[in-house]
Length: 194
Ligand SMILES: CCCCCCCC(=O)SCCNC(=O)CCNC(=O)[C@H](O)C(C)(C)COP(=O)(O)OP(=O)(O)OC[C@H]1O[C@@H](n2cnc3c(N)ncnc32)[C@H](O)[C@@H]1OP(=O)(O)O
Image (cartoon, rainbow, N blue to C red; front, side, top):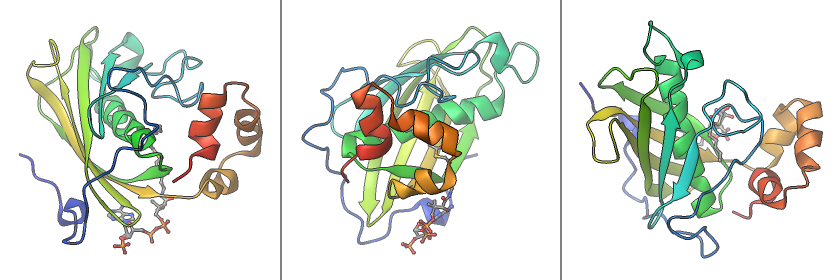
């Protein structure tokens, strides 16, 4: 069964997303936006280490290989981990818009079980923008980019100011991230110009 809820249908006044002129070129790896991110950070030993690559327009492809630490049932990926992979891929799209946004709603269909050791081939695109609301969709496939769909999601991201993180995040991590010597990561976390 699938079909997203009414709150994930773009309103009549929604517009097509506009790729930012400084967005990474199609094919370029995005790299981690934050080393400690559970989705993409290299400093999280049990994280997903998801690698996202810019696509055409406002689209992304990404890959994530399921590790033993990601199990739910024996030998199978935990559904919440798969939702994380979708969330991270969808969240990466906002870098192509140069908009800071957080997930407001994420609706996920789990279509096929995903075994440990399998690589999930994800693709995501922004479908519409309405004011602060960014509508996007993603799929994750097995056995290659054209393989069978295992998971899919529709999402609504909501644009926020950088204050969202500064106000709500724990101070120690905020301070450390703000002094990250990696300029690109710092920009993605704190200096993105909407
Ligand atoms: C590169 C980065 C990769 C990152 C990948 C991972 C991304 C994440 O996981 S982010 C972390 C998870 N998300 C969060 O922590 C967000 C927590 N939630 C919040 O902070 C707030 O609820 C927030 C910011 C989403 C919205 O609050 P606020 O700014 O007050 O906006 P608000 O006025 O309520 O909503 C704005 C619009 O969005 C809509 N909206 C907000 N939440 C939802 C929702 N859950 N479902 C449907 N619509 C929603 C509202 O209806 C409103 O629509 P309209 O303008 O038409 O009236």
